[in-house]
Length: 94
View (cartoon, rainbow, N blue to C red):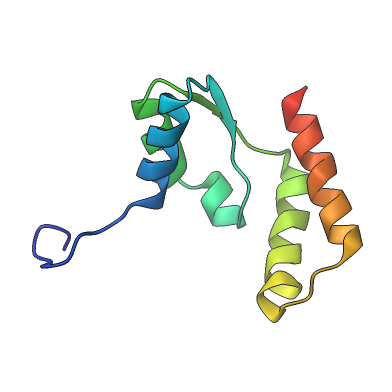
């Protein structure tokens, strides 16, 4: 499909990995929907650039997915969700 398109395509995982490589990051934390965190798209692109990646623990992935689909897609942005995401990020940094 990309080769057949007349307009340029952007692969977000490719762009994230390229930017991380340019900034000399050694490891990335991946947050998003459960499929994004557990699926093959980000790992394949990130590791192709020689960068490691981490995803949250299963219980955190489940809660993140729930927050995204129950709150964020409905334009509900709570301080509780923000605090939770910050906590998950802090855990990935350890």
